[in-house]
Image (tube, rainbow, N blue to C red):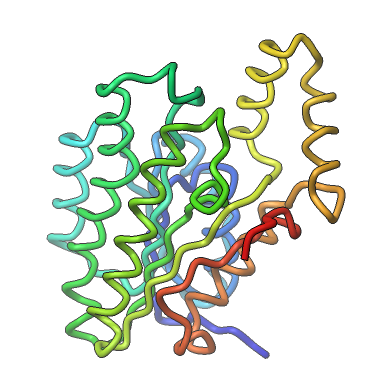
Length: 261
């Protein structure tokens, strides 16, 4: 199977590093013109120099801070005044870790703005062209915690569950327009986010971050955590014509970690 995205334009959130970067790289390698979207401008400039453009792509970037919704709203609205996209990857940095008793109502509101409002607002803008063109791909980077909550990620558990149920409803509404909407349930991956969370867990537990990582790997049936490029392969398939009949799904990518059906 040869996946080609030549002629398609993609917008990838959180794409200066980690999973977002891996998705952006793979989409570019498959022929898409990619707009990176993150806070780190220098890193995005570097990535654009590195990304494949052998198929005539034109890559670009947007400097945004997802944690400031009003500023983000202005920037993304201006972008869509002059641009259209075919593939939208909704991905942001995660909210701070912590259990339910450690968070207050303001924390939940901030997480809602970060993880839900930014996703819905961007998707609404992207859908105008997709519906007119009768083709589109919306891919949400979510978490396995929507199925099996992680007690140290109360904010993420709560708001990401809202995203995947919204996405299921949206998939039904836009399917007749040739638009697919899918959520990927992320397991443990080798990213800065995991390293930061593991460092905090190690401090609380009085052990080393390496020991936290080892315990994490032991829980995964494959006895390792995922490589970001493996995530990029799945996202690129979901963005392709070959995945045209896959929509409204929640697809785990976790090395077999989830125990629920």
